[in-house]
Amino acid sequence: MLWVVLQFENVVYKIKFVEEGCFKNSGKSTEEKIILKGVSGIVSPGEMLAILGPSGSGKTTLLTGLGGRLINGHLKGAITYNNKPFSSAIKRNTGFVTQDDVLYPHLTVTETLAFTALLRLPKTFTVEEKTAHAEEIITKLGLTKCKDSIIGDPLLRGISGGERKRVSIGQEMLINPSLLFLDEPTSGLDSTTALRIVSTLRDLAKGGRTVVMTIHQPSSRLFYMFHKVLLLTEGNPLYFGRGEDAMGYFSGIGFSPLVAMNPSDFMLDLSNDAPREDPALIKQTLVSAFKTNLEENLKEQLQEFDIHQVAEKLHEKKLNQWLNTWWQQFSVLFRRGMKERKHESFSNLKVGEVVAVAFLCGSLWWKSNNIQDQVGLLFFYTDFWAFLPMFQAIFTFPQERMMLEKERSSGMYRLSTYFMARTVGDLPMELILPTIFTIVTYWMAGLKPSAGNFFSTLLCVLYNVLVSQGVGLAIGAMIMNQESATVLGSVITLSFSLAGGYFIQHVPRFIAWIKYVSISQYTYKLLLGSQYSPGETYSCGIKATCLIEDFPTIRNIGLRGKGISVVVLAVMLLGYRLLAYVALMRIGVTRK
Ligand SMILES: Nc1ncnc2c1ncn2[C@@H]1O[C@H](COP(=O)(O)OP(=O)(O)OP(=O)(O)O)[C@@H](O)[C@H]1O
Image (cartoon, rainbow, N blue to C red; front, side, top):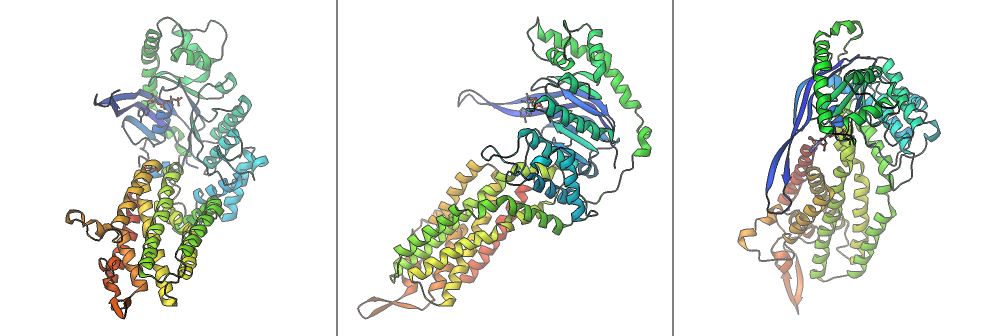
């Protein structure tokens, strides 16, 4: 195992944010906020550091920065790992447990940990060894009782909050991380469970890991389990050192509790605006006291620290870029996705919706032999099978954002494997429904009863589904917000539909270009081509025949040039997916 000494010196973090005035026209101003104001410290393998401080003091920000995940804003100061900057080797040896547990609600505890083991343990382990490792973690974290229960979410009863937290910790323990960061691992838990979790973490530290966590209000039993404590207030350090020395330090500078109290409560009182005379002055005194009494000493320690003290234990392994092959990652992500979403893809509601609309259409167009009506049905295929797949696809990435962020920032898999597994996984179901729909409506409506005509209509519908899905995926990935993406998606599909060539024959010149970007226009042409051929006639009066090509709703689009439509749709099919992929590249980015 890689042993890591984490050092941070004078860490300053600033962000710029736009502040809007109270009134619409009162303008915006760009504010700069300094969240961390020069924080230093050192944590060695075997040690556990607790970052303490009131809400908003910058604990999470510091932890995120130390974990290499702070990418927005201005981060200054030196953060090193064995005297080196953050690297991909460090990234893969780092466990990061966020405050909110990001887990798939429909998987069981065992499945969750087993899939993580399959993805995060290197290919030198066999599948059986990886699964056994997950089982071992389950036992170690006392999760045996609930190992077959589903995780759940606010709407779905699952395991308890404490158990969920332990699953999140377990996911990070699986990789046997050299560095483990945890954001409030005990919040919302009873003191016994909290103690159990911190004891487990201390045992992990003892094995040579470097553990850093933020913690809100530890009981005194917990407080003394930490090797080092860092107290923050408004981004300023007030104390860094051994937990047991903290009370001595504060009484040395003239701050002692009046009655015996939990040291962490006392320290939080000092760093908070607790009701006492002039809290601002007290904070100022404490900040200055830190600078004169502890900071110099700490900086000296950082400068003098000889990495070679732990050198014999520091054998940095050369790590491969990825722990598992593309196919291994793809197959695990594919299977995990199928398990997590099986209730969604095969939901009776979705199938019911499509079958009901199919029979309704079949009845409305029953044995229709009127060309206008048939053309109407073909355009309905274009519209319905653009809207439905696009709206489903829009939610794909925004819904998975948190998971993607968490897993990609720990270097768990390639973006390409995730993208393929996520988009290919649901494909069978997404193609089965339009197929059922087309079979039902085609034969009920009495479109041309030849296998050739039927299959080309079906292929056009499926092609339309795939291209429209691409649009949905791209919008979702670019906006990553379900509400805004839905609004934009509606506007885009509606525009495509209006420009499809069915509703309007005489489009003004200045907006006529819109048909060239409209998926509906190309699909509509292909669907018309699947039923009618150039030169074909129909009876348009007594003993009169007319060319189908000249039929009003067909004339504009025409029956020639199908090849171009196929090519343009193919470009869109790939182009929109590429756009979605590029948009996803920004998710889960770390410093390296
Ligand atoms: N991107 C951001 N934009 C604006 N303010 C931010 C941003 N990130 C952090 N802050 C602010 O920085 C301060 C520190 O935030 P941080 O989450 O680190 O605090 P914390 O000590 O972890 O708080 P808590 O215990 O409540 O989780 C807060 O005032 C927060 O509002």
